[in-house]
Length: 121
Image 1: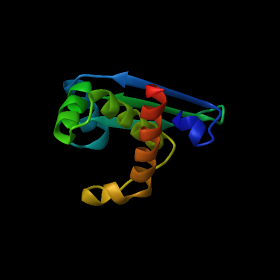
Image 2: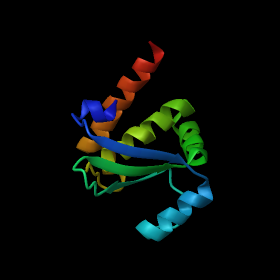
Image 3: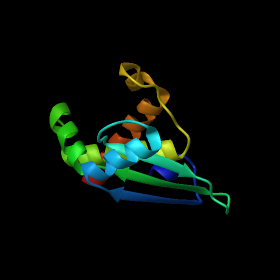
């Protein structure tokens, strides 16, 4: 749904659900950050000219975030998939509180709402 909404027709994107320990390892090895995070995404070079990427999501972190923000876990997982796909497509956001005002965040929330509505109908 995100790829289609962004006009992408040729894409290969994987989504892996991983443990807190596994995502903390990826976080440390590739981003130089300590501890688990909810989502990490990597855009990769596609020799065929399309979009290619890997997304790692930690459901336990997502569960804690969902509880903190008062949203269903399913919605939070959808949000993280959307977030990851947007990163694979080259979107980025600032760190800190200003991230929720960024174009990426606004696009993420619009696409998340659209996906949740589609799942309900």
